[in-house]
Length: 457
Ligand SMILES: Cc1cc2nc3c(=O)[nH]c(=O)nc-3n(C[C@H](O)[C@H](O)[C@H](O)COP(=O)(O)OP(=O)(O)OC[C@H]3O[C@@H](n4cnc5c(N)ncnc54)[C@H](O)[C@@H]3O)c2cc1C
Image (tube, rainbow, N blue to C red; front, side):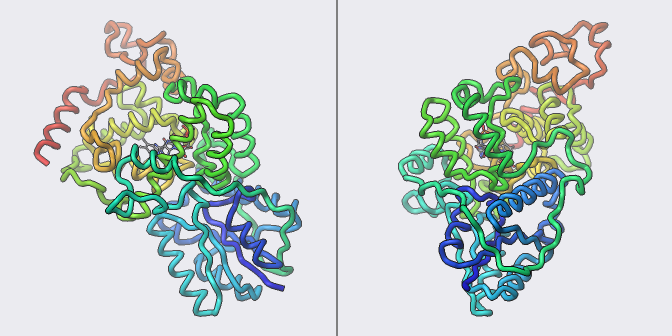
C-alpha cells in the first residue's frame, strides 16, 4: 500500500484541489491532514473571527471526506514536526501541499522539505492552487514580478488557466491514524455577531446563489455601498473553500460585463500575491517608501481609537468601521475610504490600520490586506500615490441615498437622504438632537498636512 499525506493549508476544499487530486492519483491511501499551527496562534494571526470560520471549514471538510469514505486528521503543534510524524506513522512516501506566497509559507515549505528529505520522503508543492496563475508564471521583461496592475492584467488574461478538477468520489484513509477533535465554532469567543458561515458547502452555495442573482449587476453595482451586491466570497477565497480558478472559469463561461468585472477583481488578488511572493518584506515594510514620518501614537492615539470605534464624525467612515466590527467583513469601497482617512487625512502609519483590519477581517490576508493598505497609503503600487479620498464626496457618490450610513450608524437613522453625510451642516438645534461625535479634523486641514509631509519626503 502506498500512502500520501495531503497537508491542507489555505485550500480547505475537495472540489478543484490539485494537491488532493495528485495525491489520490499517486497513492493507494491518502491522509488528509490539517495542523492547527501554534506558530500562527503565537503570531497573533489566529483571531476569533478567522478561528471561528476555520472551525466551520474543518467541520465541513471532515464531513465531505466522510461522505467519500475518508475523514480529516487534525493535529496541533508545529506544522513541520506534526506532518513529519504523521508521514512516519503511516509510512507515507510523500507529502503534498499547496504553494503559498507569504514569507511564512515559504519558510514552512523549506523546513518541511528538509525534514522530509532527511527521513527519505519527498515533498511535492502544487502551484496554481491558491491563485489562478502561480506567482512568477508571467513576468515583465527584466523583473521577477509586475509592479503595475494594468499590464499584469493584460498578460494574465492571455494565459489559459489549468482545467477545473472534480471532487474525488472516494478517499481511502489508512486505519488508526490519531487525530484530535476538530475545533467547533462554539468553542471560540469574541466572534463578530454577523460573521458569515464558513466551509466549502456554504461557499459553493454562496457562489451559486450570487452567480444567479448578483453577477450580472456586479459591474454597475460593485461600488454601491448600500446595494451590497459584491460576491462576499473573500473569506472563502482566503481559506480556499472556493478555488479562484474555478470561479474565473465559471464566470467566463457565464459571460457578460458583470463576469468580466468580477474576473478583473480576482486578477487583483493574483496581482497582490505575485507582488508578495517576490517581495515578502512588503508585508511590513514600504514597498516604495515615501520616507513618511507618520504621526506618533502619542499625538494621534485618540484619533486612532476614534477611527477604530467608528466615531470620527464622518458618517461613511464610521459606518464602514462599524460594519467591520459587526461582520468581520467590510465592503471594498469602505475599505478604501477608511484606509485613506487613516493614512492620509489623519496621517497615521498604514501598519496601524492594517493590523487592526487583520484583527477583525475574516478574509484578513497578508497579501491582500498589507498590499491594499500600501496601495491606499501611497507606499505600494498605486500610480497616483498622493490621492486622498474625500469621505463626503465618496459618501455622496457611493451611498447617494445614505442607506449604508443609516444601516450602520443608528444615531443618524432619522436623517433623510444624502444629508446624512454632513450632519455638521444641520441647524444647531437640530444637530444637538443627534448623539453623534463632531468631526475629528477638517478635511482640508488633514489633506494639507499630508501633502506637506509628502512634499518634504
Ligand atoms: C485597505 C484594504 C484592505 C483589504 N484587505 C483585504 C484582505 O485582508 N483580504 C481580502 O481578501 N481582500 C482585502 N481587500 C480587498 C477587497 O476589499 C476585498 O477582497 C473585497 O472587498 C471582498 O469582498 P467581495 O468578496 O464581495 O469582493 P468582490 O468584489 O466580489 O470581488 C471578488 C474577489 O476578488 C478579490 N478582490 C476584490 N478586490 C480586490 C483587491 N482590491 N485586492 C485583492 N483582491 C481583491 C477578492 O478575493 C474578492 O473576494 C482589501 C482592500 C483594501 C482597500
